[in-house]
Length: 308
Ligand SMILES: [Zn+2]
Image 1 (cartoon, rainbow, N blue to C red):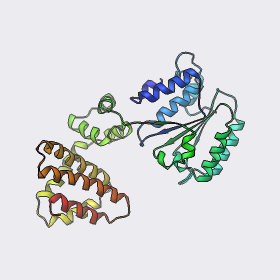
Image 2 (tube, rainbow, N blue to C red):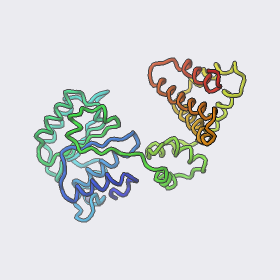
Image 3 (cartoon, rainbow, N blue to C red):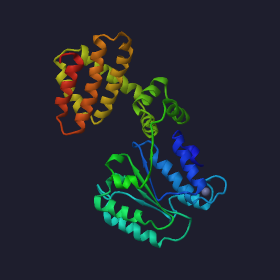
């Protein structure tokens, strides 16, 4: 099983295959993309391919090295994960030493740095020092969903692959292969996952999206047309939901759909719906910070009702 098991990301796959064929392997790679975008899977296949002994297609998935890699037992692969909130300098130092003593099994020693944006400044500098004079056949693979939070000097030392969202058709293909969703439910998952295969699969596994979307539509009806005095108790009830983010995403989807339908008319209603879309997004952002959830929702609901 090789790179073909990754759907989409054709340009990255081609570049990696060319790198392997030509044997021009860099000392550091950065794979960035949202959680669920598939960066880890691609990076792991690349690491597997680096030490694969197949002469025809790497990674073959069958040779001893490939099997050790997929079972997590390859002695030449190490993983650095944050200890608490940060990747510390001691961890980078330990890796440096341990890599020095590793057996010569396979051609490359590969060090994964997970959530690389959590490298502390001293740790990042220590990594840079290694990259200045890298021991032969050592490859660092950095993974990050927040590449902008990495030191520019670190990024500049890496070959950077930024994973792009997949097309709706590609996501549809993944879903249809593994799940039996109703067309309505599939539509909600496609819209909410926005090109992220991991998120689409996670959502499809949880299921119940037709009902969840219907509940949000009922909520909108109550807010827009129900008794006005209910607004505040609704805000209070919704503010206590654990999956508030999800409710807001579904709300956004609802208003965006109405806005798209209304768009050809370009009247007052169109701009009202557009403003509401913005307001939902803004509320979601605010709730990420330290605001009063109930008050933020009251403001949003008043706007949805057309009061403010
Ligand atoms: Zn192999």
